[in-house]
Amino acid sequence: CAAVLAYFFWTPAAYVNYGDLIAPRALPDVRLEGIDGRPFRLHDLNKRWVLVNMSSGRCDEQCVRRHFYMRQVRLMQGRNTERVERLWLITDDVQPDPKLLEAYAGMHVARARRDVVAAFPSPTDPGDHIYLIDPLGHVMLRFPMDPDPKGMNRDLSRLLRASRIG
Image 1 (spheres, rainbow, N blue to C red):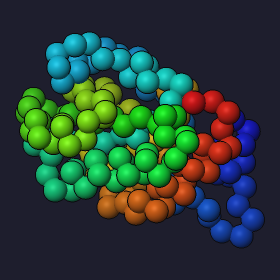
Image 2: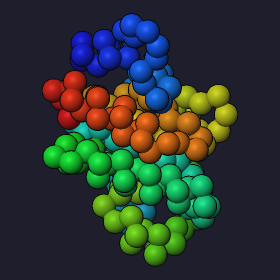
Image 3: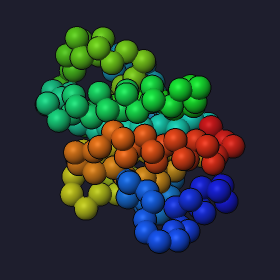
Image 4: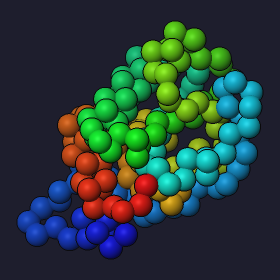
């Protein structure tokens, strides 16, 4: 944990992280509904780093691009790929396109309640960003609205290298 704090707070000349570091905020341990109707808990993903996208089940072009970036950034981690999960929190009752779910197989999908969405700090709409949850279940990093996958990869790679958890 000290390595993670040192990485983000000690900057000799300039900022080194791409994403916005946010004060770690614990997510509520609530029971959500998975897209398949089965119960889903955010804490089921503890012990893993989790990239999170929130949007409508309609998933517009920007949403699809964020899913693509999340998948690619996870794959870029090489031998650490298994330490990273992807989560799509759907913020409405719209059923997502089955082709989209098939294209991004392996991504966890659940419907988000308002209290869960509110736990993700954002200057605008939380659905405008990709977030990173640490293995202890804290939201800690927010990537820009239209993220650069190389910057995301650099941040995540450094965290995985510095962290002994997850």
